[in-house]
Length: 287
Image 1 (tube, rainbow, N blue to C red):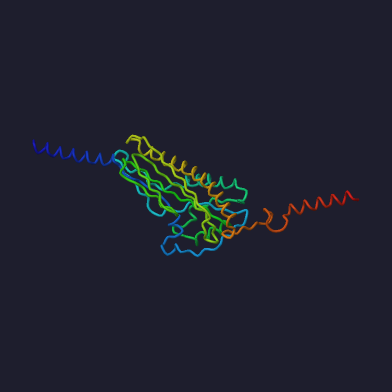
Image 2: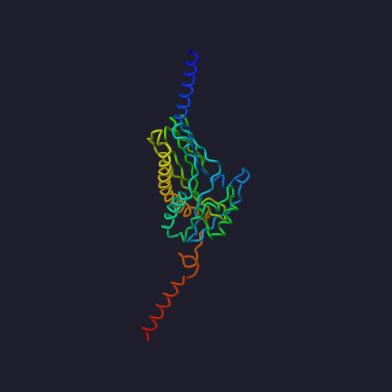
């Protein structure tokens, strides 16, 4: 009898450990990296660059860089495996279209192409960008990357976001969703980064263990939307700073104008037609 009670106690103790471990949860994470895409090897990070020559209005491409590592999934006793799935193509398309719509509002942008993820090869680097440049006839590319972590425990884990210029370190609490979306704008021919803009968000979840998976999916979508909104705002600021930088240091970026745009080159066709009409009218009045 005592032996059965002892075995039952041990079994109950093990069960409680499993439940507590499941409730404590884990950290799930999905990410992509511009650094890993452009410079897959340490030796690749020494790239021969030249002075960018921007032909206005510019032709821009925008794309998500490929995920470089398997997504890390968490586990919860009640909900099972949670989080960690790669960002769906439909979500990527929606986010890219939101950013692209912002670019279309600039008068110096001639056109912007949303490039499917399938055309970007993992670790493809600038040789891959050269192929895309030829395929889509673009001059500049906006490379979007992301890093999202979801914490299902309480204050035990922290997260480091590595970017082109440094790292962000944040701590996580129960059902927190931390998201960073980053856009780096490159002139493809010169291999030079023109400017970059990050956006971050932190969504606090309040789910019960039973509906944890559903809540985390909702928080994931919301996290990307909030981070993208902040990133677009930062893009506007960084673009303005870039334009001021060109004015102060014109030797760092050369500006050319396509035919019929701005003050570059000879008269545009419209200017020629207007001059012809005015000249013909004056001759007619004299007669």
